Image (cartoon, rainbow over all chains, first blue to last red; front, side, top):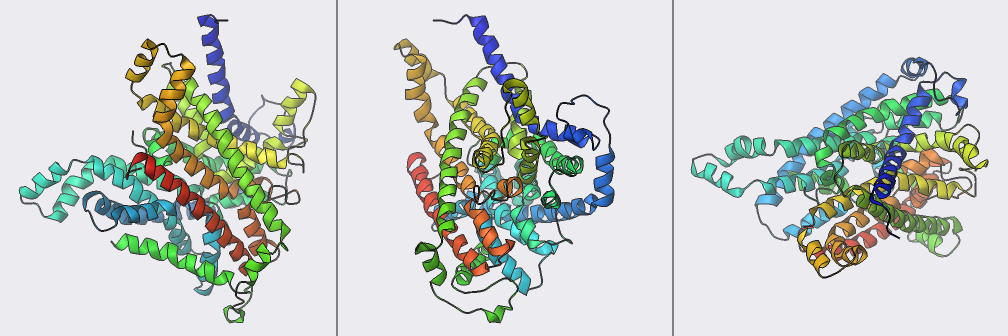
Length: 274
Length: 282
C-alpha cells in the first residue's frame, strides 16, 4: 500500500500546480477578456488571439476612469496618513505605558474590526446628508478611518513592542527629551512597520466598497464602485467590464507583492508575528 | 489619547445614532423633522414573524458563515500541509495564493460573474468539454452554492497561509520524540500539531466567520441578492430595505441593529475563548 516516492512527489507537484492555477485563473481570465475584441468576448473557446487595447481606450475615454482613479488616490492617501498618525500615537501608548484597564481598551479596539459596514453606513449616510457632506472626500476619509485606525493601532503596537525599551531609556539618560526619543530613535526603528501598516491601510481603503457605494454619488466616487455601471447591462460590454476590473485590481496586487513578508501579520490584524 | 477619542467619536456616535433611527419611522427622502419615535415597532415587526424575509435572510447568513468557515478551514489545512516542505518556486506559489486575498472584492464578484455566465462563461465551456453538461450557475438552484464557492476561493488561501505560518513555527523536537515513541503521522498531527495550532486557528476562524457574516460586496456584484432572495445575506437585506427601492431607512436600521448584535455576541464569545487560551496578549 506504500506509494513509491517518485509517484508521491509527482502527485504532490500536480496538486500544488493546480492550487496555484486555481488561485490566479479568474484574474488571468479577466485579463484575457479585457484584451479581446467585442465579438471574441462571447467565445470562451478562443485562448490565443491578437490582443487589442480598445476596451482600455474606451473605459478611459467614455467612462472617465482617470477621474475615479484620482478620487481613489485622494481618499486612500489622506485616510492612510491620518490613520497612521493617530493610530501609531495610540499604539505607542499601548506599547509603552501601562494605564488603567489597558487590555480592555485594546479589546474594544479589536472588536471594532468586527463592525459590519452595512450597519455603520446608515448612520453615516443620514448624518452626512444633514451636514451636506454626502459625496465629498471628507466623509469617505472619516468613514475609512473607522477601520484604518484600529488596524494601525494593533499593527503598530506589535512593532513598537519589538523595539527594546533599553534603547529608549539609554537615549533618555543621554539627555534626549521624550519628543527627541520619539523622533530620532523610535521613528527610524519602526519605519519598516510603518511602511507595512501604511501599505495595508492603502490596500484596505482602496478595496472598500460599501461605504464608497452609499456615501458618494459621482464627485467622490472611487474605482471599486464603478462596477455598478455594469450591473444593469450584463453581458453587453464584457470587454470594458473586464478592463475596469483589471485596472482597479492591479495596483492592489502590486502592493500585496511588496509586503509579502508582512502579509500574515497584516491579515490577522497584527496578532500573529513572524 | 486623542486618537482613541476620535475613534470613539467615529464609531460610537454613529452606532448610537443607528439605534436611535431604528426606533423611528424615518424614510429616505423625508426631512429630518418628519420622523417620529415609534418605540419598538420596527423590532416587533421583525420578531413577531410578520417579516419572513428577515428570518430567511438570518438563516441564509448564518448557514453561509458556518459553511464558508468550515470549508475554508478544511481546504486551508490541506493546502498548508501541502506547502509544508522545502521546494523551488515556493515564493511563486505564495504570490499566487496572495492574489485571491488581496484583489478588490467588488472586482472578485465581477470576475466570477464573467466566468459563471451560462452561455459565454469559461466555466461552462470547460464543463462542456469535460462532461458535456452545462450548469446555470447563477440560477435559483445554484446561486447560493456559487456565492459560497467564490468565498471559498477567495479565503482558502488566507486560512492556508495562517495555518502554514503556525505549522512552520512549531519546533521539530515534539515530532521527533513522537516518532521515537512510535506515533504515526495521523497521531502526531492530532496530538501535536492541532493543540499547538489552536490559538492561531481560533483567531483565523474568528476573523473568517465574522467577515463572512458581514459580507456585502461580493454577492452585491455577483447576484444582487437574487434570484428572488436566494442569496440575500443580512447585509444585502439591509441594503434592499434601506436603499434599493423602498427607502425604509428606519426598518433597515432595525435590521442593521440585529446584525450588529449578532456579530457582537458571536465575536465577544469567540474573543473570550481566544483570551482564555492564549493569555492576555492574543
